[in-house]
Length: 368
Figure 1 (spheres, rainbow, N blue to C red):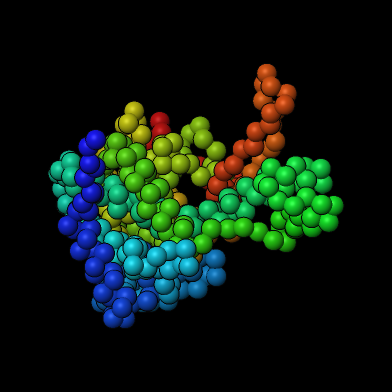
Figure 2: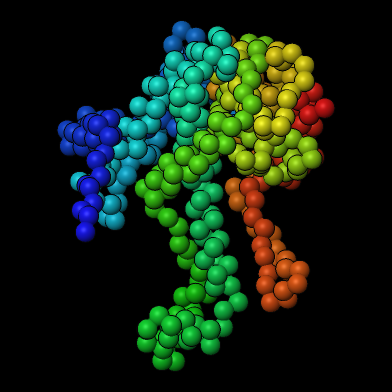
């Protein structure tokens, strides 16, 4: 019989755990957490300020990057179900800080020299950084809550009292007439939306890390290009933007594995664009004024709350986009061909163009 070796955690991870524990006990860590890295927003700063526009309220103000797009304890992993001695509440916030620190120099390389100057480890690091920008924000968090709610509504929709009795028996629970009546009434509250289940924020935070690891592989495998733009490029609180491209629908958000192009503003005049492995964009690696405006429209339309730009500019204030659609939708049921006893549902994430006539895809030459 062989004895299994005890797993040894990497020294860097143990140091991160200790730092998270120490800061939480000492109370020295800031409680305001950035939804977008301040180091990233500084690239739009002039005299220490950036312009912050709440897209759906139409309000704009100037702010230091360090005070923009923050929420109290947004990444805190604190729950009765989580042992703080094993997983310190500040672990995820600490991890984000470490990854953001590594990304600063990589953005400089991408801006000045292009993707071909990155080493494979740098490309992998930045792929994970980009993936975290997709999963750390409001869009990912709200969609996950709604998907869980929808799952339970769908699961119990159409259940009969006899079905409830069978469920109680299968679970080894009392199944008297009174028990069935009580359980049936509770399930109807779930179906009607009066009562709902949703994951705790710490659970979604943890899920965002594991989801980002899978997304990073797709980002790494794409064709990366940097485009020079007019110095009016903006960014937002969901800065990694999936552009489906034809023949996909403008009304649905594409995924990391399916989007024809995924863009990320590197600064006010540089755009990183990552295309599917078989896609090669036509034309020069410069965007003219019209193309830059089209990209800005995509960025503003992908905003959850805030868009950002240089304080001397007013693009985000004046760029009209529709109100946000629901973050998650379900269609169906649809019959399964060859199996009349099975039905399937289709779920998707609508874009702001879901209820209006959408504009053409941006940068037409990318798709020609």
